[in-house]
Length: 351
Ligand code: TRP
Image 1 (cartoon, protein in one colour):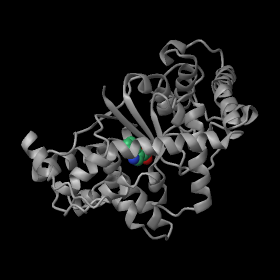
Image 2 (tube, rainbow, N blue to C red):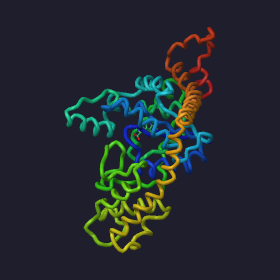
Image 3 (cartoon, rainbow, N blue to C red):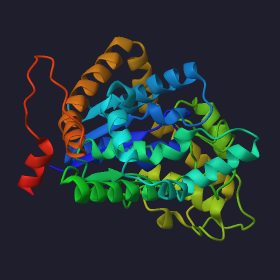
């Protein structure tokens, strides 16, 4: 079975965009077809100014929502990145394989660093090294496929480059992963700025529907979505991005094709009303399950504890092998016995 790994960063409340673009598919498809890990990547939430209590709260909430959305701990591994030391351990080794120039070329780094400087803030070093940690997330698990949005393609490419480079220099240690972009994933855009995606890090905005928004809040946000100067309700992403976005959302909620919805609605208002109700109905069961899970925090904590244990057991051998391969002296194990096995040599021999 293929190994699949994806992560979600607890830097904001999960949005309809996260759900339709990623989480829904993890629950409906990926956990059945693959040996899948879904990680709350909390270390990544520390790369820009953050509030400790908020990160903690958002991490717990994200985990609860992933379960509410249908991730089944019997079928996949749901865990929190910081619970598994292997990520940070491997990240350092990969920093010794990546180059400074490579990091500074990352588009997301350039954009976020520029934004931070414009605000007069300082740029955390971890923002620069973030893609290396992400590579460690992926490579520690022998991941074959990484389902992510297009904006993460460059980061997954880096993970591939680092895997290949490490393997060439130190012997075959890592599986070379690839990014996958599910064909039917809806690309949900901000309702007020249909030119930018409905991301969770954009902070509170009237154009962002959160998974935990009350039905009336959802309705209000959808009804106030920007529309275009045309009249007809047709699917034209370039000419009518606002309407196209609503059609995409409606189609994603009802399982149809946005193009088929062209001409179905007599007015923008009718389209908005239909879309709002479709979103409310889509979120209803997720919110109900979330509420149940919140009433049982011990259950969620238990899932995360088991998930971390499983993840650790998966990552440990690969990361240990990388330590040996790169030239670090094996520690004498707790039992006092050094196995004496040179894992790097073993992997080289097996090549
Ligand atoms: N960088 C990703 C994002 O912002 C989150 C992420 C971190 C991730 N580590 C990952 C995604 C590993 C896939 C695999 O969305």
